[in-house]
Image (tube, rainbow, N blue to C red; front, side, top):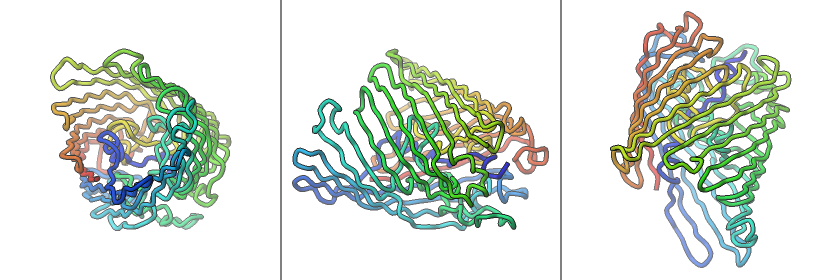
Length: 456
């Protein structure tokens, strides 16, 4: 099994989720006249991180307590032009600059010497407005170009946000230079999220039947440059929730990158998922679940017939001070399951299960069973406090078993700034010397981070 297939397709996109929970990335209007609006888009994030222990994923082969900094800024223009009786056209062009400094992350995916500026968003689209009333307002939305794409809560696709750095060792028999895996650092912040090329058709509105037809082409070497297409069918009810059915087929990979990563199975891979989430019409209740069946053909692990599923239930005690919400979730991933482009968009712990485990130590949403308990408190409209517990069973053939507790806060300082400190305590069952990944022993590792997110 290769380094990356063992690790899974983890990206650390939690910063993006914080933005989603506090509102959309802002834009400053530059021009508004007649039927045209032109805006300047800007978002930035920075973080400082420390881990008392390092993890033997790439170059971390010695005892270390890394401290590192990550940052990125995305900036550019977006525009909307309303057509007379024919909907509207829209588009955006954004650059993104990212960097990592210091010791590099705790798993060694970055070295602390990364920086890069590249095009992030470059897309154009058309929305139908009131042109097709039976589909609702903007019931047809067709777009092309470089942009992010999300299905459901990101269990399978949450943008193309795996951001490796330059930490991979040169391998004498490698078909691809390891430096080709780097996207400029900012690994945890998951700075780059856009697929290189897309064609996306959305039919339907916020309620009722909704269909996404999509073709996505990744230029991310860490994802083997995968090309995929599929359809996502949902029924959305404002009272009860959403049910969805998704089919994804892998169409192609970069052959050299796929051989290096062990991702040859992605060419022709078939993934079918069914999911549901909502309140079932019960105030203060939240339930969610998804089942995924995956045919990996001549897979890199097992017989190629893989699966993953989870069930989750939460209750908000709205009558109590600070409105505590208590959640339990059980998730299970077969040993050959490929988590694809999974990410995070509805809170810490989804789908990065444990800040240390999900980003550095493993497991990475493959070959594991996970028990999760979460508690959130809201002492003020702009402040949220949280505590998360994870227990990993049968993880990595048992060698990645362990548990983790994360304590965090999210503070919306004002319309333009969000601060989020977090401290985590990760206890592996096995050290790297015993077959696990934590270097220096199996004692509890204390991990800390402070994230700042800025947007207009």
